[in-house]
Length: 290
Image (cartoon, rainbow, N blue to C red; front, side, top):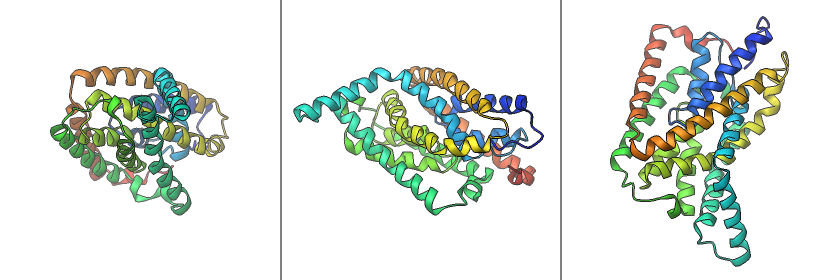
């Protein structure tokens, strides 16, 4: 966050802790971490924390997903190694590695384009509360449609490069606040006929490169923004995000084994409607200074 001059170190640490918890809860649930990291501090009167700080706090989530899926990643690396040695790229682990690589390209290209060609992105209307509310409602409706139409016959062992591209294109949409990286990828995978838990698992694995790259790219800027207090508040936020993200991943995978995504559809509709109501009742919320 860009701390105000009168914010103490203790207050900065408290704000980062809250943001870390919010990040951990929302990064892997299909409800948009970016939206909540924008909305929660604004509603608390702290202002928009900014792209750089939120991207660094997301590193806590990547630590959690790396630790949680360490065996999956080891199998992917081993599968790619075998494929390079034997020339057999049909093994599920090798195909998963290819899908992850292909699926990362769209968000990298889109992210670079925004960074180079859209200098006013951080303060653009696309990051406004009204925009977040509308996007949240639209994505809720798309998730509901995917839940109704998806065949849920495919599993992670069936993954192909085309799946990586399809879900990766959906992941690139998450650069728009309110879309939700996990929500857009889960929605695309459900439309593609995946079982819910396998769709979520691939969403988590696919997020590893993109979240890591975003956090590392913004790390320098975030430390500069927080120079008034040093790296301690950021470190606290990262640790909180890591712990809570681990718990959220474990919970969601268990939940989707037996439950549908309808609770998230309902939540996103209510979240979007609440934001529209708050902005209508208090237009100054859109102009909270950073």
